[in-house]
Length: 167
Image (cartoon, rainbow, N blue to C red):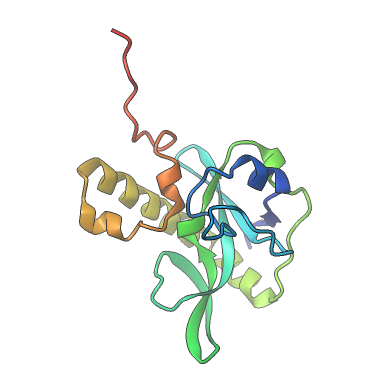
């Protein structure tokens, strides 16, 4: 079984990344709200960056940019639980990640994710690659799928901003 660990993002991450759009825990007013608990995140290396992919519950049943660990009913509606690729963030400094492990409430989630680590990384890399290509081609149909993605914060890191020359 792969040696994966879940962590949490630190309060410093949220304090220093108020400018990011579409991140988890950001209210309609644009401010990050403290809900008294943090999300467990899985750290993966893609495109030379360390991404933190959050574990989320109650994702819409039609949300496909995720690794689903289970589907269940909440308030009479079917919802997903799993890793949400669309809310992944780049970790620029390890001080933004807690040192203590985050323990999942349901051990079966951990087992399913552990057994699928390579599949998860490949799927997330494909998700990022599809976004990069869509931005480069200005493909509005594909970009519609990324409307609520945190990837829009990382154009510089993903090589989507052309360097200005000082001629």
